[in-house]
Image 1: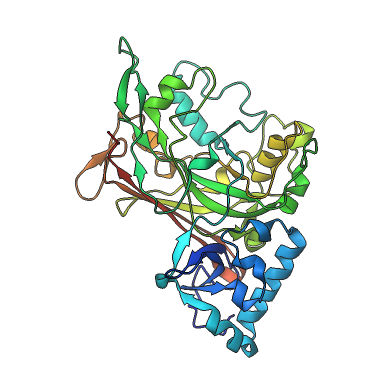
Image 2: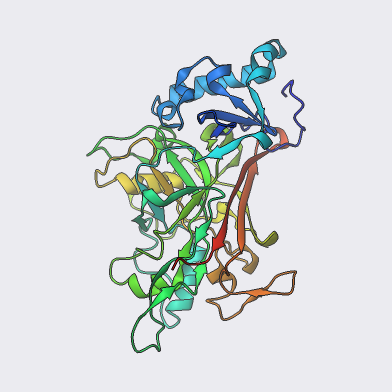
Length: 396
């Protein structure tokens, strides 16, 4: 319990303490922690210049011991009222703060870890064969994306141009995407990197990953469908990927840890996951303010620990600020699908919004907001905030 006037049911209480980067007025961006509806300026409160940086990277690079001791210090400041004189001058109302991209992105990898999502897509595009490819249950499938277009929440998304070719078209055409989509995902931020040639075992996940955020991997399904054979996603994905402004530390998610679903067949030994790093995150997707989906992250077939282990098993290095995302989160029920292509079944079954309109894919002006919470101690909920974006017309 904090001495601050934070509501007992706030998803941003002392059990959470997510990190972000904020600025006020013309001041330079710096690192803060959210508590209730305020931001605590850590450079001031902790008298530590590492938090005066415009990104979390210098702090994350200090490693797990520093992460733990800093969290303890912040908690003490907010729980013991004797520190009121230090804390109060360092607090800023959230409404007065401008939020920035919380970390400098190194490399970006996007996975495809939901069996329900992969099966839905397989049924749509390979109706006469097994919905899952033969390798899917043997390894976490992923691709390397473009880190330069990782965007802070709230950044407008311009509808991409590119080549598209429907199956019955004689030749490809060029123009704005007609099948613009979302992907509700969860992202994992590497704090402590690993050297070239040194795989990260599943059991060392928490020694390397600093925290968790929300991701919307905007996707152009028509550009993607034409270009992805034989090398996978390219222009249909690289135009924009949005991340939430708050990074929830792994330490705040101990009560959200769950066992992953049963695996059949058993994965190879380097992917054996005995650490219960499935996470019980309840995600909500809103389109123009209307709730359209509730994807459950606990249903993910591959855990973030397995993703990191597979990403590095060939000796690939990681570095502070690397981001890898889960891929679309979908559950077994129709209202748990984390993309519009699933919700509208490839556009063939448009879904209705309360204002009387229907959607198969995104229209110009549409606004998407993805949020999530997780269980915390003593019945508390841990909040992730939102990742938002609005679709702007194509350029040219």
